[in-house]
Length: 480
Image (tube, rainbow, N blue to C red; front, side, top):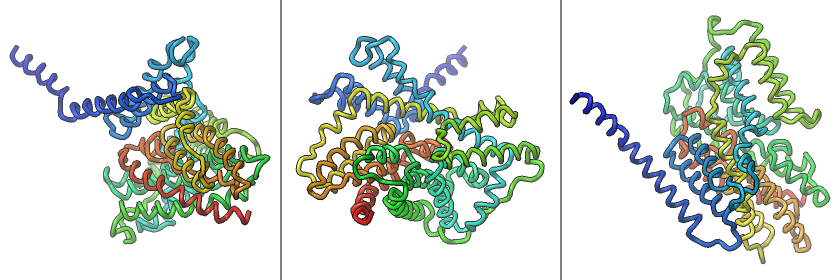
């Protein structure tokens, strides 16, 4: 009996280990900070719904940064809070019995299906050995010096992201790197550098073309009838800045992660495809290669055929499951926690935009007496802050019409509506949190990074991107 009592007591005490107590205290601190930020001050013009959305936003941001609980769990908590605080019919926000569904609708959004398609491609590559085959040949071209391997991976990722979804690009490149990661220790600095490099390059590469990311297309569409920007002009405005930022982030990773051995010839950086025993049947390999080729080709030629990238994602989903290459067991092993993580970010974005919180924040920004450069710099930084916490597409939809209208009014004093291009590009420089961009969520989901790893580099690129983007646009626009 005494042994049973001691066992029960030990179980109870186990619930109050230091790590558990620290987590509970962190959650309590986040609740206190969010309450003080959202409900104590009276913000003129902000509705009660906006106050509640601000509470959830501050609380979720604190939880993601501190990692008090798993990141995907924070997303679920945020969705639950949004439903509880804003979903009651005839309350401060919802008017009908089904209005709360808008906070769970992102689970079925096009972005989630795009992720799912990318995960299916990656899973099929790993199962059939295609990832090892690609890695042994493609990555071997960059040699065994860690810094050069990192440069090659970032260049390939950025180039693909100019024409292919950055979600799909990050997934494909990480699939190629998976065999290398498997041979390295859990806390290996090269693995951390490569993982962060994929995220940075996928995000920055999307700046390069109009089709690289939705904010680019939104800006071009809003400029129609004003100072229009065509495909080539966009590349001239965006690609040099993206290249500069990419070089800076490569240097940052070399200095912070690789250190003095960055340019020394390393060991075990080259590897070979699996043995014959590891390979799947030839027919399965052919199907996977063909599916890869067709999917990537359709993604790259979207302007020609007009099929949305999400619709194209159903090619690998249907082909790989219908042919039996991916079984029910394989589907169960996909990283569903990443999908939940992104869903939470999308739901939070819905609340921030629809409750008027985002519009209220923008409306409090004083623009009287500003020059065009000052305006663009401020809006670029605001874009980065908001895009870290909500959809960059939603941020662009909110900020670009306002900024373009103000810049158009400034044309008589030397303003240029095309200076809004850096504001759109700034959305791609928002990468502080796992939910900030799809590539961030993908690399974080590998389990090799902490939120602080993303935060440090994200703050760096967030600080330097606006001046770089604005300076180049100011120089280049008179020549276009």
